[in-house]
Image 1 (cartoon, rainbow, N blue to C red):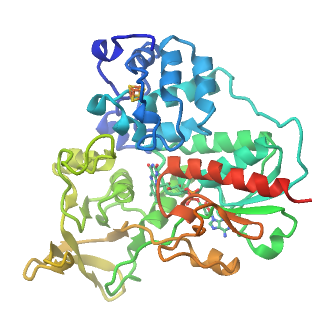
Image 2: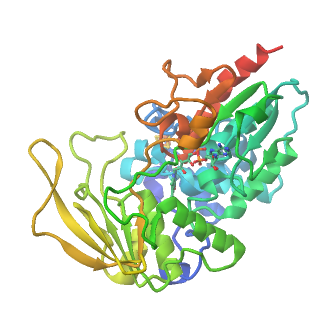
Image 3: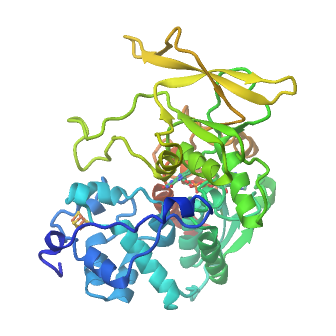
Length: 469
Ligand SMILES: Cc1cc2nc3c(=O)[nH]c(=O)nc-3n(C[C@H](O)[C@H](O)[C@H](O)COP(=O)(O)OP(=O)(O)OC[C@H]3O[C@@H](n4cnc5c(N)ncnc54)[C@H](O)[C@@H]3O)c2cc1C
Ligand code: SF4
């Protein structure tokens, strides 16, 4: 630990948001970076704890060597700090933007945690800026071929490591651009897409082949010694009401994909919220991204419906540190809605009772109803609590129920009861030369968990490849 009093001398300051009115007028990065001096000061706050909970199973799933690189950063040894970070973190520029920073929630400084997420983003961006990040081309090749299906964070992390181990890697992606939910899902303001493209270019320079617009089919994978399925858990949970096929009713990821396509193509989105009353079903992170996107597209208003009651403002006794705090969070989209509309867009303990359409099949309004828990713990609708809200765009962000059936059918694979390709032994090996990783194996989760799982899967794939003649 460089500074013995860092956390006493310096207050935690996160990378600030850009002005709300300005950022609502574009899809550029939400945040602004801080100066080099500010980063050194923030890194000085890390106490190099004897038991670094940030690195533990409560904290970073990649088990990043956080106290080590914070200390090097504090001392101004940025190149060395970055090298320590890259020992465990394949793509800090992704996590530096989108990670909920489990490490900070587990930090011994609790609410005053070290700004690990901003520090890692600073280190990797400095690395790119100063030319320290160069293609790492393996000195020797194993002669073994691996196909990675899906180019989300798990697929990219696995492809990166397999390539570094000398195997010949092809990433097969059905979308027109690589990145999975990093590209089409997470909005541009949270993760600018040139950051994903920059990493993919680097991986190509390192020898990884990307086959885009290509849906994986087993017959065309005969030439590969191993196939790692990283297709995500992208089947959305639907609503059990009529008129789900009405015009103006969309699943969140389809809407967010169209929005990103429009940003990248500099066109209007084919599913724009402009001049519409928007209702988002689902009060979680995906719903929040829909709120932020709809506001930027110029909606009249945006409302978020959430079945559950509002979480408590503070940790409860059964949710102590260093666990992830199950407390009320107000994310950027909700903050922006408060700024624009004067109140929190979330309505709790409420669901959709009826989708109301006109004669042409367009959604015009939504009937909502309040929910309450029965003594058996089930949800029941509260009679007489119905309300009709105008609605021109209904976005369903009610979660995901597992992997897409098409891929399962093609590969003749049966998921578990939660829609996951999770082998019974808890590993990654499914059958023959097939393996699984990321959300496809674990269910919808987080970018950092997908990265860690992709890397963990490589251990098993590598052992398998070494055993193939
Ligand atoms: C809207 C949204 C916002 C999110 N925001 C965050 C966030 O801020 N922070 C965070 O940590 N997590 C976030 N998440 C979760 C995170 O994005 C996922 O957990 C993560 O992307 C999972 O990675 P993956 O590689 O397993 O799958 P995915 O990212 O889903 O990638 C799977 C890829 O496989 C491709 N594919 C599927 N089947 C085939 C096939 N048969 N052939 C070829 N290609 C195929 C798909 O096209 C896709 O590109 C968010 C999720 C959503 C939906
Ligand atoms: S728990 Fe917090 S203060 Fe302690 S080593 Fe980890 S980041 Fe630093």
